[in-house]
Length: 58
Length: 394
Ligand SMILES: Cc1cc2nc3c(=O)[nH]c(=O)nc-3n(C[C@H](O)[C@H](O)[C@H](O)COP(=O)(O)OP(=O)(O)OC[C@H]3O[C@@H](n4cnc5c(N)ncnc54)[C@H](O)[C@@H]3O)c2cc1C
Ligand code: SF4
Ligand code: SF4
Image (tube, rainbow over all chains, first blue to last red; front, side, top):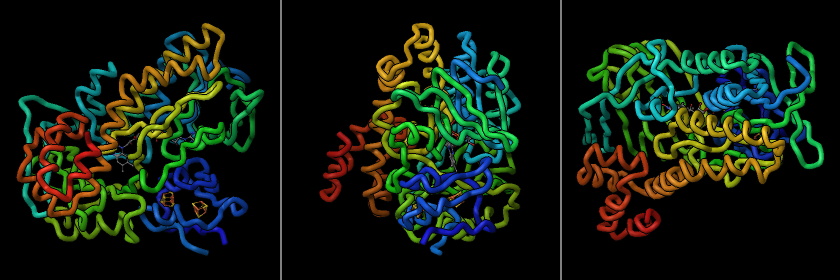
């Protein structure tokens, strides 16, 4: 299952985008974090990194 | 925006804007693209910047961003012992990053670069093993722009290099997870940076207080990307709750971010591509500072781009000149600093307390610049369980 973003928490910092080994994340216009469900392998790296805990298991 | 440029720079941080300015000053046609609506905002930065750094870069201090002078630092060990250094002259500033970044982009524009905010690069044009341009999304339209050279200055997200086959993924062991409040709070020493260490306070990192004036400060934290199930925010909130006067600070801004603290990329170029700044992991792995490093690399990349285009050769072999010159000037030092980080992260709180007894503030600042590491190794050698860490330093 691909990861889900909690938009109430996300700070749009972009760190998780750099961490994702599968290029599954995009920070659109520098603002909205999008998960590419086809690419996400549920590896959890983004969740581990996120400074505010905004990426959750689905 | 035209259909074709000599150089397209992706990202208007300090890395991208310096690249664009220098390339434009050499007479190239340059396009600088930034996906965010406002350059420099929101900041992802503690805003520390050194006087020497500005001098080396030839950046003239401007009162619009040099908002607070810094003369030294207090380093606080886990047991509370303070190791301080105050220099005879000013050594740095806490800057207003939003203004700093914006002015760098303005300088690029004045030099002749075309600058476009709210314009997102969503893919590369590849042909015969060369990067030949970018796909841009702007006002809901998707356009193709040709470029002889594309510069990936897209910061910690570092996707552009990966599209071109350079693995710039930020590995969890080599990125710090950072969180910060800018707050109004009465400060005791507004001209000193405060750094708090301890594995309970900030595993593999530190808490910082960077004053922006007598009663405003960036109070932030960086922790290892993979060291805890607790978030950077949780660690910082716990620290603040226990520390006066910060627990009564009034929060005027909240920031988050990732700081690449690994070794720089093994290769900074490909055919038609150069990678600059955070995207290339060009950051001081000890203190996490990257504004100087990105700017320095950007200026070098701009010069090499001009030379390559004048010669009509944008191959990887030609662009390697940037890679080689950068490694000679900064790469070796940053690599040494990276090894120091790997050694320090093995230290327990007891070890850190022990170090605080043995070291002066000057030592600590020297270490953060990759100097006096022999002295540190000798001190570590005196503790049998740290011999391994000491050897890694040598
Ligand atoms: C919390 C924190 C504190 C820090 N404190 C300090 C400090 O005190 N001192 C210091 O020197 N450094 C500090 N740093 C590090 C410093 O902020 C970075 O090293 C520096 O910003 C790197 O510059 P850059 O130009 O490489 O990238 P950035 O400044 O990140 O710029 C990259 C730009 O590219 C844009 N971009 C990304 N993808 C695209 C795309 N596809 N299309 C168009 N645009 C794109 C982004 O929106 C961004 O504006 C800190 C970092 C953090 C997170
Ligand atoms: S790391 Fe967290 S806060 Fe930053 S963009 Fe990703 S989800 Fe949002
Ligand atoms: S879970 Fe792994 S693959 Fe999925 S978005 Fe996060 S880092 Fe990428």
